[in-house]
Length: 288
Image 1 (tube, rainbow, N blue to C red):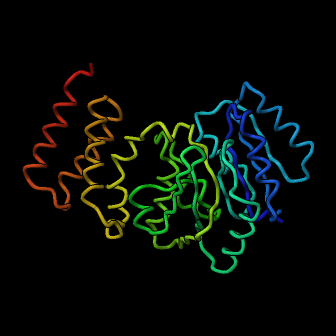
Image 2 (spheres, rainbow, N blue to C red):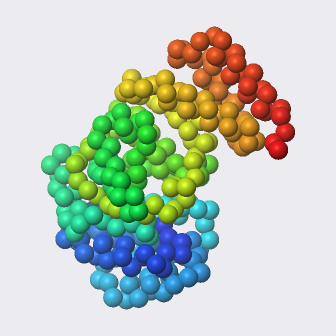
């Protein structure tokens, strides 16, 4: 019988925090889970810690260590390896908020079936709590993957993580779920995890994804769930301009900007023309 949860942990040089992350999992009251550890070829003591952990654990543990193309590549490998009914992703510097998280999530799923269940997360450094308790918050500003549990069938629809998005591929995938009325999502007011804020996603902005953010919601007919569509549109337009200025993903940026300046979205004619001319200017101007 397959485990209820597959807990997937992408790893790379996590020797300083990994044991704490593993302890927060093994201390869970709910035990029907497997661990899927995907290491990107660490050159510190990460693999040694895992080796010791595997010898001492009586849980089903899968482990590979090989070079990868970043965290989302590792998470995709974890999806392929996982055998659980529900998938959860946690980092080597993240921890569950308490020992009953899995038990409470399991009960919530049993009480009211859904395809995606999510709760609250807290930053370990800033101590900022993120409670994305409305669809507007999720669609407008993002959601941390450490707070989300995915039913396995979701990935048959969404596919795996898009490696073209450097730090927002998890948000991209989640939005595809929220944008599909066939899927039921459920928020539970539960503190799921504390997440490490020293990673790439805390210091790098994914201009490529956010240039596409408004378009993705529009294509999925989810804009009516957004309270401030004008600001979201302006942010996506700014990201398109930034990409061409920096000579990054220029074809992608142009496809998005043409969608915005030709669409029925409230933009004035003057603004559309000026934006088009600015795109041409930054596209032709050499990068300093």
